Length: 107
Image (tube, rainbow, N blue to C red; front, side, top):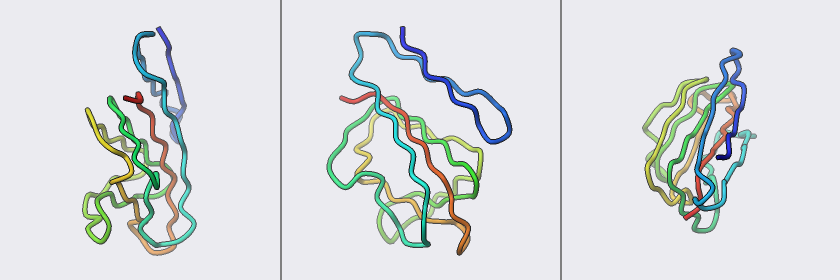
């Protein structure tokens, strides 16, 4: 069993457990640098059991031009299966750069 742990902004400990026979673990952090919608990955990347943690400032999540789902700072969002190249993030407030960490299992 592989156990990944990380500490959130307020000291809360988060974990992601996956059995050894699963695909490779995917982990990436992105800190926004401007207010433009940004793709998390630019090429196809299919993952399952995805956990998205937003830190620092709230973010909008969606597809290009339709980032409508608000994820507040220190909140998580999960997907069972998703191509993360289809996900776009945007600062919820102008100039309030957010930090996104995504964990999942590669297909």
